[in-house]
Amino acid sequence: MTNAHRQLLNLPNILTLSRIVAVPIVVVLLLFESKQTSFWAAIVFLAASLTDWLDGYLARKWEVVTVLGKFLDPLADKLIVMAAMIMLIPLDRVPAWAVFVILARDIIVSGIRSIASSEGIVIDASTLGKYKTIFQMIALVALLLHYEYYWFFGLQFDFLHASMHNVGMVIFYIALLLTVWSGADYFAKFFKIFAR
Image (tube, rainbow, N blue to C red):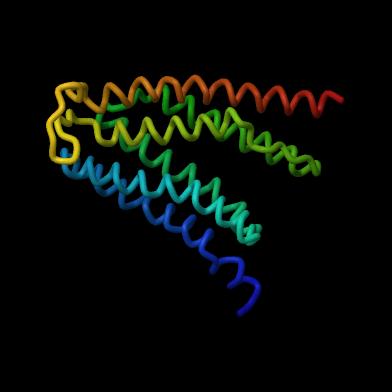
């Protein structure tokens, strides 16, 4: 087995690739929007989100952190999150301006990290950025579910009358606040390093 094969064919990288494969599945399900397809889009998105935690954990535990994995992991995260957000805009589940802010922040932060990297400086992902990602993913699961659900494991509960959309929007705006805050934190770190 060549080094290239070893770089690709380990479980953490396969999990990361599965997250990329999930992107067109979520997109197609939302193209044929209904309560059922929204539910399955949420399940696929949730499964993909869980691989985000699992692939990093396994890569560190098994000491199989690869250059390819470092490249694919954030790419897979951005693809699945942005695909879901963009598909939710025409369904009126998220405001377009908020998606623009999140997209712009991610592009700017990627640029900042690239500039720093070209100078041999690593700006690590901040704790705020990690919380931002967690809140985004939880919000998107709820926004993908969208509809009212009166049942839980086959039982009806009156307190679940609030739609998943309303729950998702509350979490989404928290994620948006964390997005802007963590973006500002990256700017501060960047200017602090290069102002020396």
